[in-house]
Length: 233
Image 1 (tube, helix red, strand yellow):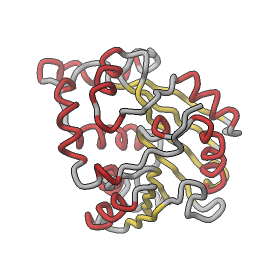
Image 2: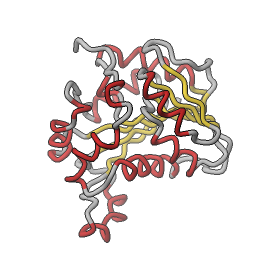
Image 3: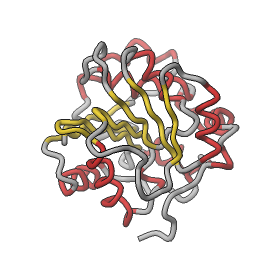
Image 4: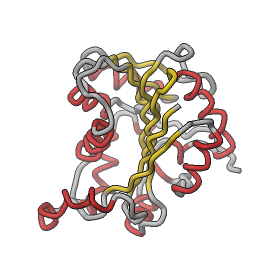
């Protein structure tokens, strides 16, 4: 469908924060906020005290992994990415108990049925659509029976999201995934159950802080800036 296979972020490996800051001003929050909120959402569905084996697929410089450690103190944490420079940056952050491995773009560097949870954030829209099924098969391969896959993506139904994506240097070639596409992809990928939730309905500016908790009451409404699907193998 597209000519690219995987977008490689080597060129951004050392300045993720600067590039993000240029495009996130409209949202009222910084990169750390968006990294943490996703892990907090995931933690609502998992036992935070258990010894889970967890992977951040498309981990970049490991920013989400540091919040995985905060929310899942007993977990065994892994990260993988096609960008070797990003893997180097992630390793240098020295998140305790975490291991980062380069990904060759074809075979994930993990054994069959070795992980409890695979998490990915804003990654699939950087991968050619004709690669999605093969990648999902790899994710299914490395998940244990009843393992969980959390996929976070931008919601193309939200106009602010489309504006941010248009203006972000990361997303020059990105094609956003409608939630209906993601759900069909997961069904095709043999996940037995799934739940879709929408997030980030309001800007994160101080003016709206009082109303942010109420967003969870409308997570069924497909208008949030982002969404995620929790799928069970």
